[in-house]
Image (cartoon, rainbow, N blue to C red):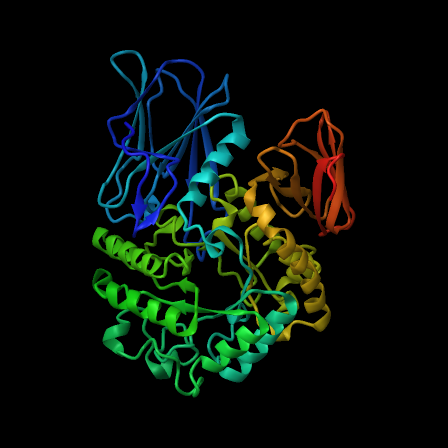
Length: 541
């Protein structure tokens, strides 16, 4: 893996020169204390949970390795510095022609470790990043690289809060002007930024529609089925989308749309899809598009899908943001295939099916945060008052959690209200409004830091945390989440300082103290949340 050009662009969008492109000639490392971390990741979250597994090896001359995956870390155990090796392409399970191995470690004739990476230039190639400073330094370099890949617009580099009614499982049966005007009003009242219309706003009928049986739903071949597939539904929206756009603008809310680029014939209609998205963007001012129904089974399909997103990003001058759905059981770009396009729509979870468990959602975010920048993740909260009977009074059931904690689990990433807002109790909407106002005040500051998982890996018992560490570091944001266990805990501190630090509470009830033994934290209530800022005592707030 020998570095070549240190900067490049996709679709005319410039990227910062923070990474080296590499090829498969190999890296030579002297024998000694080298730790190899193999980060095994899973997408297709309709079928999987527990999305990250880490295997660690201490390199040894007698133990050659052949490993599959996209992300590997080589770290000097004495200096805690090293290299991140990232194969910027879909996960092995989603590649058209996966290799039996992605990274190989053998001994060379010169007595060095030889690290070789499999590369298919038709898909993409390896990126090599160097770091120092252990976990914090590694995470900072990896997050900086991911952020540099995205257009420098607020919709790409600052978190956004969306709502989408699909989480209440009415699908498109309530999709009409009157219903969505109420959703827009509720979103404005609560402080959400985008109301995203999911499948059903368009004339065409998909397989997920409530009318799929009688309407003959499609999941690809949209342009062949109906050239008017992607115009607003004439019955549900007899006046088109203009009344929704007008009312949303009046209330300071944006509209988002669900869209499915046509997978038929290896995305041969990619240019028509790009032109359609650009038309919707220019006509209605839509910037947020959720991309779904992707089935990229060949290298040609991946190329054309990338062409589609690149054309839209370039011709919208980076204004369009794609939420890339990685939930379905079909080959999709996943975590590393289209880093530049926008957040990853991580999960479909529903109380109707009993598969929404808040501590699992927090666990997946917490485990991914070390590797996938949380600013690239769309994380959901649901209406916990629905389908209570499906959970049999379990102490970790959604209805046991305060609505503010459910939403707070998503605040370190891009929040998604995965429900019909108008059916939330007024008390919940009022509490969420207070929380989201705090979040909007500090989200940009949060997004400028390096976001780290701290404390216990979430399991519904102990205290877990997400921290945003500024570069000085002159300030530490700390989001604390308590399960059903003890009110206090000691966790490793991402900063070390001899200075006196003070704690400022942004939301909730809790405490944090920076000590010689680590970060001592407390959250007052079971299943509670607290957001604190730690800063030097001489800083004026």
